[in-house]
Image (cartoon, rainbow, N blue to C red; front, top):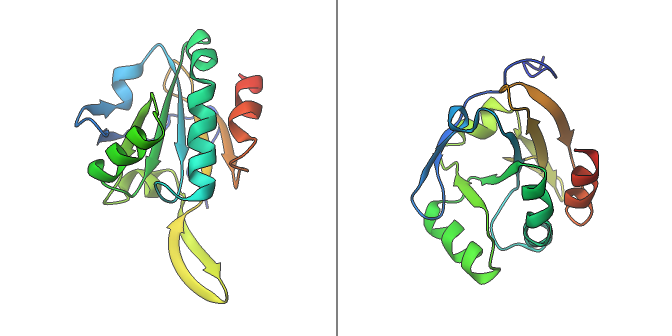
Amino acid sequence: MSKLAIGSPAPAFDAEDQHGTRHRLEDYRGKTVVLYFYPKDDTPGCTKEACSFRDLSKDYAAKQVVVFGVSPDNAASHQKFAQKFELDFSLLADVDKKIAEAYEVWVEKSMYGKKYMGVERSTFVIGPDGNLVQELRKVKPETHPTELLESL
């Protein structure tokens, strides 16, 4: 059973981004935070999603929203990905998968009949009070950032 519930406190996080800067949820009190989880840097779906967030970054900023991408890749991988696609937001390195587990997105997946553990593409919106406002699971990378922006 999920421990995540809309209106309840979002799980805390503390992670480095592609520049080596630490980000903690508590540092963003008073702002709306979008935490989007994606499986892997520089793969087709993840690139589409990241570039869409990049293209909408001024619109998110205008709504006082801070966007973080989160994947199990390390900071060096995030740095290459961010540079290659000129991403202007932080990508959090969740190498130990603690954030993914706290948000219940580290799940069993299946491809070609083979089961493995991986990140379920999901997004969470955390309100200025630190509570969960939206939980979006199995989102479509192409359209998700636009649909999310319209819902904020």
